[in-house]
Image 1 (spheres, rainbow, N blue to C red):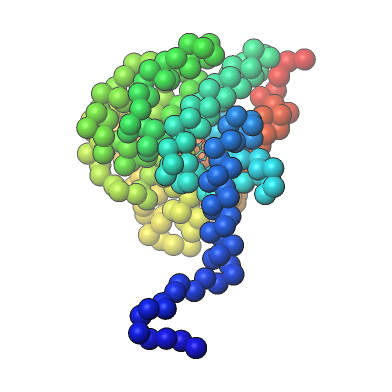
Image 2 (cartoon, rainbow, N blue to C red):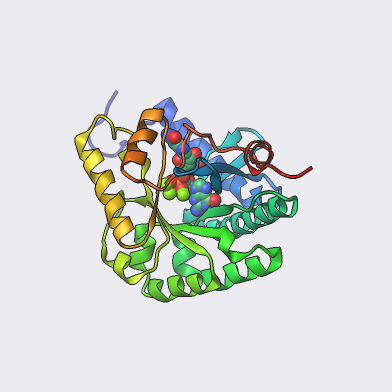
Length: 278
Ligand code: C2E
Ligand code: MG
Ligand code: MG
Ligand code: MG
């Protein structure tokens, strides 16, 4: 029976939330060994230039091939890794793996494409991103023009040093992209100070763009803002031909989404998009 004197209060877990907690606990413990056990894998999602329909890049997206739970999406473990600090090592692995893979495609005779890599906030704000990128480019031999770092608005604004970090990254010759544009902690200030190459319109604006007039207005405004500032626009989460047609009418430069392709393994990219010489 329920007691109300406060001594025997306890938290009630539904079987579901208990299971979630156990899973999270287990995942956090397992995460420590995952790098060493080579359980991470990168999938790559094509980015298409709207004008020509050609693939000009891919975004590297991490998955964890967990021995018990199978292939896990980043939503399951990236925030855990941010909390326990492992994100730094994981992020280094992602950067190096993406550069190695892109270099391999080029060496096999594929048409050169760019690879975009997501930076975690923690990594960007606390570690020496510039020297890491420099070292990885040197080790892998990838030409810097074929690497793009995806950062968020928060990273561009929040770091005392963001300005210098972004300047130095630009000096290395890599591209910088603002991910999930318009969803976070927005300020337009950094757009005038930094030389950003690409703005990625978040899929939450793209999803209802044909049915929600406000989304359409926002998409249109982001595209003109970006173009007037000399940046290119990539629309994320494009799932239908109608969405694509709308975006092309708005003069959007590039498209990424299930309409063209889900994220694929490196072999999948090779077969469908890189067109290697034989
Ligand atoms: P993001 O960087 O915004 O990546 C785009 C996400 O949208 C990917 O989810 C992709 O699979 C998904 N997506 C692409 N096209 C469509 C579409 O047409 N419809 C829908 N509904 N979704 C689409 P994913 O791979 O689950 O990644 C989720 C997030 O996890 C990424 O969002 C990124 O913030 C983070 N993430 C992924 N890989 C890494 C990584 O290597 N390092 C870090 N720090 N974060 C990563
Ligand atoms: Mg991204
Ligand atoms: Mg993101
Ligand atoms: Mg995004």
